[in-house]
Image (tube, rainbow, N blue to C red; front, top):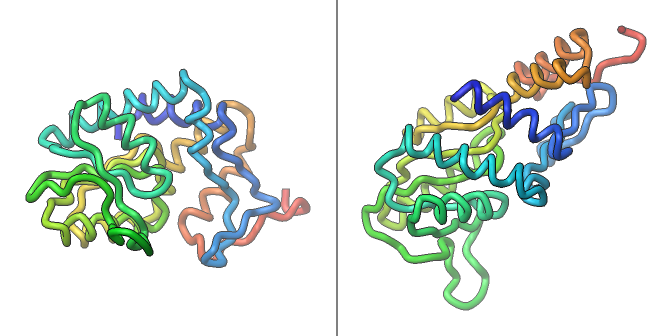
Length: 217
């Protein structure tokens, strides 16, 4: 991860309102986990300057870590626009991977031209545990292509996610991580140092974390 890019992306995500931090009134994930952060990076697409910076940052990282990419694969749905922008900038073929096959027509799981043995760089908006992202990587492999790597805008940086990607042998690079975002939030006086300590505990054990109580400050 490029720290300079990470800090700038963190600032832009906060500027766009794509990330919300709420240590006292957490959000609930589909898994049932309580989370003090809500991330909707799709909001960055509505701001041309922010969208352009992220696009160029993705290209810079892709060229450095994945120089042999032969196609870009967007992971549906949030990875599709970012992947399309990247593919256009790099002048590479683009395809996208659905979470499940379409229920009508050709019943495609992958939309776009299948390129046998092509090195596909997958693009995600957000990495949590990595489960859905790696299903897309497996779909690419099952179609006869190579899952060359995964590139994401943001990651919660869970240990379990890193383990999943290592086990699946899919190299992962991200523009920004949760720890860097917290540092930027402190710099902007959006959270206190005491709140940051509590927010850091969530990343260490998200399945056990509970909201911060006002009386504990």
